[in-house]
Amino acid sequence: MSSQKDQSDFLKANAASLRAIAGGIDAQVRYAGQDTHIGKTEIRLPALPRETHAQNRSDSRGASDSAGLWLAHHNEKTHQTTAPSAPMAKAIFDAAETARVEALGSNQMAGVKQNLNARLEQKYAKHAIGAPESGDDSALIDAVRLMVREVLTGEKPPASTN
Image (cartoon, rainbow, N blue to C red; front, top):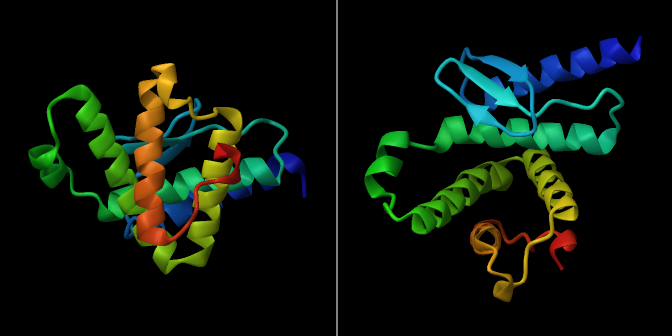
């Protein structure tokens, strides 16, 4: 089997897993860019590099699982009516909601937990959380997400955050 065929099979299986976790939705899954985007008719997951290794695949599975869990457990109407309007408060609220949604999957499915943990480990290995005095607002958002995650799952923050 060729490397290109292996990657194609992986991407198809990853998309099928996302759809299953999301409750059997029938949405198109594309791989492009570096971020996940969930639209009304399409889900975009980060593209895999040409030369993939286990870490890239784990990261892709984590992105897929996170998107599937978001679709299965997030209620946009409730979220919009309860979210604060101040930008920083809303960003923190959104981070806590991401942690809540991912905790539901992590606590129920060991493979999902492993994929989400691998994704977080890789994220913080690439982009360290800034020190509190750095003025980096995203550091506070990341810290809240990781604290909520720890309370809901018992999982310590990734080693790369130390």
